[in-house]
Image 1 (cartoon, one colour):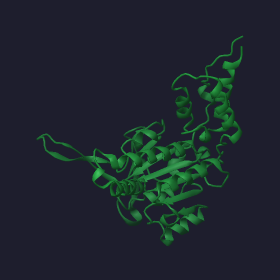
Image 2: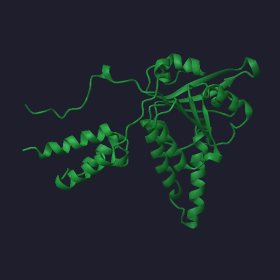
Image 3: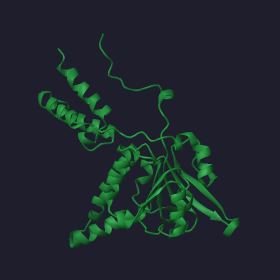
Image 4: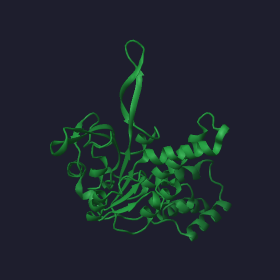
Length: 298
């Protein structure tokens, strides 16, 4: 009997994934403070603003670690390598926090503008930073960790009834496609001040049934975990097992023998969230190898 090529599984058997969340809001509303309450935080501080004693004390007490500008937090490639390591190595961390994504993205654009000089036209200085951003998000989504990505906020401009431009809302400051790559977008704000202050989040784009778009929720780790599922957020991380050198060699040798349809390898890589066979998981590349071997069977 011919083996089916269909790969879909029963929805009930799909493991719930750890949340990947973008948060933004004005300064001083508790974006950073609440994010440090997530379990086992690997804190990537691009701003260099969380090196104050109160932040470090809270981070240490929660079992987290600090990765700041002195360690390479403002270098996109370095940060990507850190996320890749978190995705593929065994460790005790549970959460990635990037604070802020605005800083590293804008710094990358500034570097490109300086490098290109007069050649910077038609958004050329954004091309490389956007590619780096896409690669960063690929690894964040592959990693079996919670991710809280913090951004600055900026005005949304539009025309009023008189046809005049005015600020009509708020959004995050960064790569404009970022919200489509993650589970949830929250705008954090505060009502009151001091000990009486209450922090809330307006739910923007959402793929999560427990966080309906347009709803206002209390903003704290405790409240977030109650909605999402504390058992999912706090469970042990399972590292991605990358393809071995032998597996990569085997698939390359098979491809010299079997001609694959145009675009098939690209589809495999996209589905695996990888840019090359070396970045594929062992499980994914074994499925590809089996597919090619199947074409060799008489």
